[in-house]
Image (cartoon, rainbow, N blue to C red; front, side, top):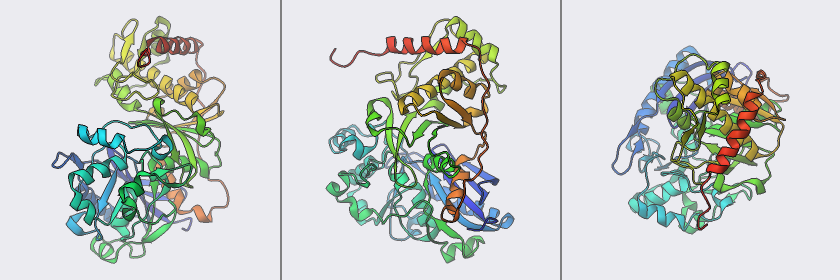
Length: 475
C-alpha cells in the first residue's frame, strides 16, 4: 500500500459495528456505525448477516464517493464463526446456518456433551466460558442440530475471514482469530486442536493467510453494483484485540502489556510465561497476528461497570474528591456482578457493596470507576511483572481511570491512548506491514499522581476480596 492510500476497515464487535475510512498511517478520516442486529430463533438467537451485509455495501459505496479507497481490512471479535456454502451469494448471505449469538444459552445436553470433547487447556486457549462462546462449541451445536447443513457446507470461517470471503470469494483461516478462544487452534504448538480431526472438521478449515495478506480483490459484480473500485484489495484481517495490540507492536512497544476496555477488559501480553496462565481465573492463551502466543486475561468490565453505576450515571467526569471520599470511608464493590467469575473463582453473581453504600448517582459512578480500575490492576498482576502498560478503549475517556490504575499498580509505567479507534488504526497499519521500515508514531499520555488514600484503599480491597472468596469445592 502507498502512504496516501485509504483503507476501509470493517470492525465487527459484539454490540456495535463500525466501518471506517482510515489512511495508511492509521488516522481515521470518517466512521459509520451500526448496532449489531440480533434476531431471535429459530434455530437459535443469531446475528442478522443479511442486514449487516446490506449496510456494509451501502456504507462502502458512500465512503468510496468521498475517499479513494484502495483496500478493505476486516476485524472482529473471536467468539463467533459462520458456516458457509461455496458461493458467497447463496441464500443472500452465503451462510449455511445462521451465525450464533455467543450469549445465547446452550441446550444442557450440548453443554454436557461438548465438555467431554473440548480437550486440554492449550487446545482450548481458555476455560469453558458462558453461553455459546467458542467457535468449536458453536460448530458442535450446529452439527447436532442440523447435521445435513454441516455435511453440505464448504467452510467454517471466523468473523473477519467471513467478510473477506464475502468481498473476494476467497476463504482463509487466520491465527489471531483462531487464537481468540475458538477452541479450534492450539496456539503454542501452532496446530489444530484435537477436536478438529476427531470431528472431521478439517475439511471445513481453509488454508491459512497472515492478517496482513491480500487474499484477493473485490468480486467484479460487487464493485459494479455498489460503485466500488474494481481493484479494491481485500485483506485477511484479524481478531479485534490482536489487531489493536499490533498497533503498539508496530510502534515498537513489543514488551508492553496492553489493556483494552469496553464491554470486556481485555489484557494481552507477549511476555507472560505460559505457565502463569490459569484458566480458572479468566486467563487465556491468545495469538498475535504473527501467530505467537499472547498471555491474556478477560473480565466483563463494561457489564460490571453498568451494574454498579446504574442507568443514571452522570455524563460529567468523576471528581477525585468524590472517589477519595468513598475510598476514605471504605465503600467497596466486591466481585462479581455478572455471570462470569473472571479472576475470582466462584464469584459470579455474588457482587455486593461493602461498607456505606453510595448515596448519589455521582458516587455510584465513582464506585464503578474505582472497581473497574481495581479489576484492571488485578489483570495486570495476573499477566506478570512487565513494567510497561498501555491502557486504551472506552474507560480511558474517564480521566480518573488511568490515574487510578497507576495508583493501584505501583512499580509500573502506566500510559494511555485516547484514540477511540484503535482497532481501525491497527487494521489499516496491517495493510502496510510488509513495506514498513520504521516504527509508527503512537500518541500516549501519562496519568497524574493521586493521594495515598487510594493505595491504602486497594490494599484493603484485595484483603476483602480474599476474605470474601468462596471456599474450594469439597472443603
